[in-house]
Image 1 (tube, rainbow, N blue to C red):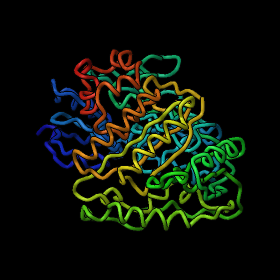
Image 2 (image 1 turned 180 degrees about the vertical axis):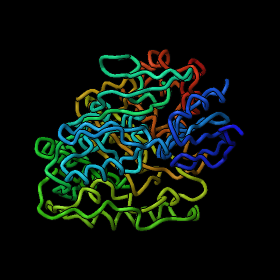
Image 3 (image 1 turned 90 degrees about the horizontal axis):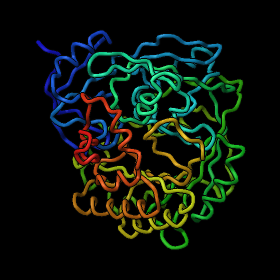
Image 4 (image 1 turned 180 degrees about the horizontal axis):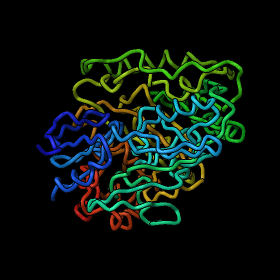
Amino acid sequence: MGALHQRKDALSWGRAHHFTHHMAQPAFADELPAILKECGPRPVLARGLGRSYGDSGLNADNVLIDMRALDHVRSFDATAGVLDAEAGITLKDVLELCAQHGGTWFPPVTPGTKFVTLGGAIANDVHGKNHHGAGCFGNHILSLRLMRSDGMVLTCSPDENAALFRATLGGMGLTGLILSARIALKAVPGPWVENEDIRYDTLDDFYALTNESLGDWEYTVAWIDCLARGRSMGRGIFSRSRHVAATRPAPPLQDPRLALPVNLPNIALNKVTLAVFNALYIRRASRKPTRKVVPFDGAFYPLDAIGQFNRLYGNRGFYQYQCVVPAATEREATRALLTEISQAGVGSFLAVLKTFGDKPSPGLMSFPMPGTTLALDFANDGAPTLALLSRLDAITRAAGGRIYAAKDGRVSAADFQAGYPQWTDFARLIDPGFSSSFWRRVSAGAAA
């Protein structure tokens, strides 16, 4: 019996796309050449924990290779902080390994969840709340091993197969199977962070707090009330954090304390419930900085406490929208985006606003640019939702910005290509045996 099995349950985190896939689940890396051979002419894509929101991690009617079992630590230099691990290892696994060595090493860049794989973090060149100082995940990858569709394994680094290395960082899994990677961790005083939450009233306040914080705080981000209008537009809670030493031992990493075993009814999240939540949530923070020393887990990964929180949107699923607009146009464009969203009366209780610094990623298709990024969820209400997202695309494009591929499930080829003018250079480096639903859509047939 072959390794491929037809499945219909491989969903993205947004749960808005439902495709049939041919799936393989290798237990060891040495099974991969035979799997690739069995795929024949069908395009291939690797899959990790499925935390991409749209269709960049899906490959409708074609092959997905589940890489989660390939999660071994190849080596860890606890003196230099260099980890060499297979692509299926999770960020949670890395954090637990660091804890075993005293908690004095930490991932240099972390997204908003620890439930992502190393391969997924590389393929999406993830960023965190410390982009202004640390850049993207790809800035800290020393080298990686890549298996192409013909079974050849290449070592890629800034000095070896450099073009393919740059294409793989943020390359959405299209350059081949990432087998393993060497990453430089960062030294920290321990597993605790000092955190401040500050309630603010206007979009200008957000930028003032950001500029005030960048010099002394490693991590900055704001939750915003996406329904606020007028002078209150952009109001929210600004959070800033930094690693600190503490004599107390840190508690173990949290697993989800609450899980949603089924999808909630579609009416559970609507304009009324969202407005009530936003009004109550913004009052949780003081206008004066509230400083606490807390374990990093709760500060960096609050949503990890809720298992399958994506089921909040019901059977219809949702779209996440994340864009970045450049510094030259950021205030006007961000205000225009928030105006469009508030006038539509939709959005999410998970609306995030933050700025990116000017440290470039080596990744050819990396998302961040110096400027402001906005991310929030929209329940999938069909045509009205898609029309709103297209209006947001138009604002982003006019401002010279772009959309994050890891979050997208519907951007047009024209808007994607305008945001990533280097996409044709990237297309030439894609493995001919790899593809995705996302890439077939945004490449408009030029690099299927």
